[in-house]
Amino acid sequence: GQLASPLARLWLWLSGRLARDARALHLGPALVGLLGRARLLPWALGGLVHGLWLLILGSALATLLALLSGRSYLFVWETTLLGSDTFVLLTQVLGALPQLLGFPQPDPASIAASGDAASPLAAARQAWAGWLLGVVLVYGLLPRLLLTMLCLWRWRRGRQRLRLDVERPGYLHLRERLLP
Image (cartoon, rainbow, N blue to C red; front, top):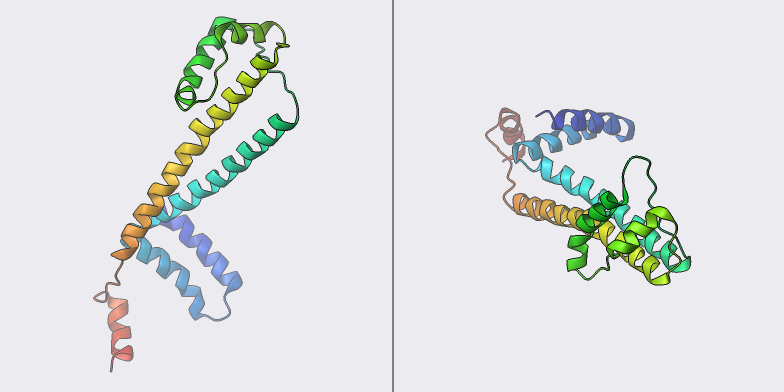
């Protein structure tokens, strides 16, 4: 399909650069064709892409946790067009799901006050930090983790039923040479 074509071209280019003999050049397109016919190529690519994003978001969350643990940050909303009531609503909507998982959410007064001046209260800063960590975890890391697990599950399930179609013309030619 259209998804396999750019991947096949990339594989051909890489194989041409890395191949030691002419036969190795055909392994990439054959693998892409086999996975495409078995409908495993989207799951393999999805697993790779979601896994990469999972690694990136996990690193970002670990970095964010380290930064918030080692230094005090002030959370200030700044805007010219929107009022503080918009940020209160946005913060409460985004923080609702993480709050169900136990992450703190700043109270409406702290949210509104953060638009005027930096809040000197340590409790407000801790609530903002917890809110930020919860939002990154719930809306960034967890969906990628679930999608990576789904792709890996579908890959493993499909790999178990993966079979060569020995009735295809290319295999008929090889069958004569390989079978006694």
